[in-house]
Image 1 (cartoon, rainbow, N blue to C red):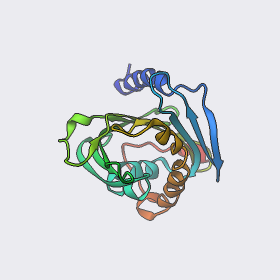
Image 2: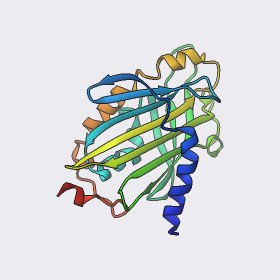
Image 3: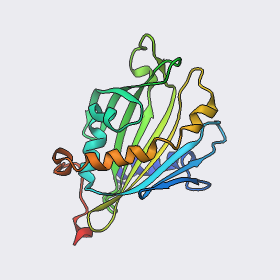
Length: 220
């Protein structure tokens, strides 16, 4: 079996129990953006799923997701973000700080993002794992210990891509869970709206990468 296909298959086995397709509750539908939540057995913090259709190429979306320094322009409460190291075109480590309202301390996180593409469907799956020990603890900040996110980019016909985002995170420290859950469906719509505007910029819109295969046949 091809190594990349094997890796994708294994990742799906681990993803299914965390972000299964059952028992999602639609919390909001606004401007063709759907926001779902789901309870977790292992946590009192809800999982979140956001789904919408983008007028975009896969390369444009991947360029935006890989452009860590602009996260503050579209990721909710992101104060700063920077790349730590690039393992390959498909694998990066990054550091980000998130703003929290007074009297809470800001949070920071260290993450490893990597992606695989199914060359039969052209679907891309981007996985982000929390790796809190990969960067020194910063004074005055609370390091996030639990974070898991997955982006699924599914090509459609006529130059469209269905984007699904799955997230489970816990802010660590003394933040009541009810506060976290209260805001879990507040930022996603704004996030996707900002993404849709950013990918219209020429530097994203005109992107092309050898390591990403575009489904040109779907657009004919």
